[in-house]
Image 1 (cartoon, rainbow, N blue to C red):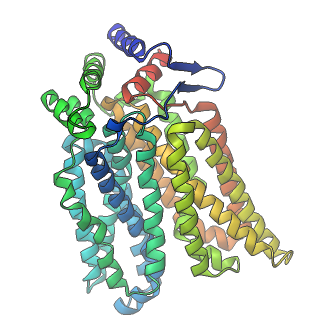
Image 2 (cartoon, helix red, strand yellow):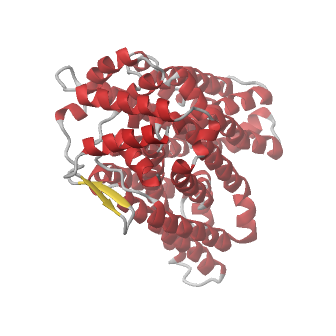
Image 3 (cartoon, rainbow, N blue to C red):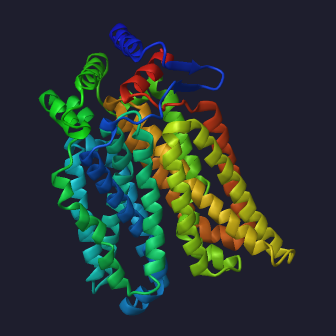
Length: 484
């Protein structure tokens, strides 16, 4: 078994070519001589449509995440909810997300990427309609948990699907798009929620789901998933659809089939397969980055940005509008650079900025508490928040991308379920306890976030491999080869 796996791995490494593959033991990086050039067949109409669907899903997830902040008082007044009942409504999104995250890998492996998206889109639309037309608290909560369930699965499914349908030259930038649109969705809820009723806002939030209904019937299934379930005869047709009718897809199809077949011969499927020695480094690295990013305060900044702005002495609307603009600019720059500079450099920059910006935000509250530099402390808070949210867009996108790249398809579902669940759980912890931390010490809370971000930087610097400019099969073969 081990000999078969090693031979298959070496075959892929040889196919990759000696001129392009560079492995640097000193910085644990893997690179390619020219990973930034984009061929005509890299981007097609169908690929653009598939990415549009993913962007709509991500935008909808952002809408769900940002909904409770601008609607709290109006929902409590209209439905007669107590603070405890609304707090339950807000937190139940995380419970649904945990449930979805726990089964995200297995459900997408069982049903396929495309069918899973269709089913979850119905849960998404149904969840918002339940909230918009509810007359009772239980239906409000049911709609909210339905949205959380879709977020838990979508957060794994989107980067996986996009990475499996794109070519090596554009995989990074296309996979980073959903992380950007999640931020847009959150900001959209904050801004629009200030002008419309909570029921109208819920109806508006159904638009991303409605926009997907027709395109979901035209986008293709993942060719890697088709190979995994033995539907080899469909792989060439799907690749021609994604690359264009004139594209030469023979080598790509053969590489996918050969690699998946070698995995079937040399390993078994199952949850415990992911805990083999050859996958330990990848699992610890990706799970560690996701956990540390959440413990570094991602959900605190996302859910309570408005509160943080007000606490720091800033206008909530001005702050949130500036935040949305910053996310957009930084996100677009990250998308343009990720396949040129590589994942590792951008990840190191983003985690370093997260560490510094958390410290800067904590420093602003420290100065405010001591009544020092009263005019300058709100400026520090604004700079810190803008730097943090901009870097989060880049960092979260790269972490999701690495999850989709580093694990072969026979264990990708198990790895996704584990990493996604741990990320959702730690994210819920931070979101739930952040208000308590603020009451204890706003300064201390942000300094703690900075410490976790610093730890994430150290992990990224010592453990993350460069993956740009290489096919998924080449990446997974070389990683497995280095673990033998």
